[in-house]
Image (cartoon, rainbow, N blue to C red; front, side, top):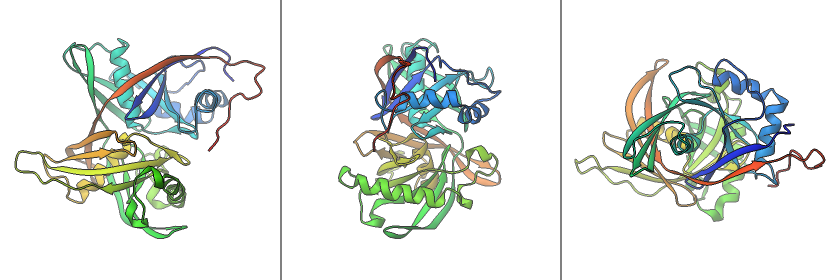
Length: 344
């Protein structure tokens, strides 16, 4: 258990927290960020630090954050290990957006007072970019340019306590199951949140060891990370000026029943992959992706690429993060509730 003070800078992106630990007080060794994640998962000290920061009384069941680590090479500005109450994740779009804002606001990456700068970040799923836009020295938006994303499978049957449902599975830095909430008579609203969490967990665990949860080249990325429920809110066709919009509201139930308050960055990339495969994103069309709390990301496909013989998209998700505070947490060696607890 770490005994040194733990300094954090906290942000929220679309309502979802992201706790940044710029100088983790435990070693996180490895030749690459992906390797550091695997070793952190096996290291009691790293797991204890994660647990302290996302358990009560210092955190909560839906806390999210990241340990800043060195990048894989000089081509990136920093690396990060993403974490939540259940472990270390492979990707995090809302966290990447927050890290871009933090890197510029902290002076770690120099940026023009008005204009844009790329903050390049190595994450466990690959190298991503937070393109930070400033106006009069204020960050006003961040484009999260993710790794290539693709549809894994359509119409995968899953048995739940509410009957069988068909889901689409897609990769957006992590693997997600996605389905319309009305398929089970639900909607992405707070009054249905308990059911969305419960059935979302059922779907995740039903598919987690299946063939659909296997990454084609990196077994470290295997597993269903979460279930994305969405509502259709009406498309607007392009009038020829490139302003077509697909409008959806979603909530992502990730890890073991955690709720993403934001529209979910990597989940939005997975949804872009599905929509592109369905032909719903012709050139110039954007996805307006609202969250269960009313925040919004916009998503676009920058280009189509090929990954392992399959068609994929290079997605971009635009949002904004805001600083909520700074903390210096301490550990009392006599505290019987360390590392903490989680009530759900």
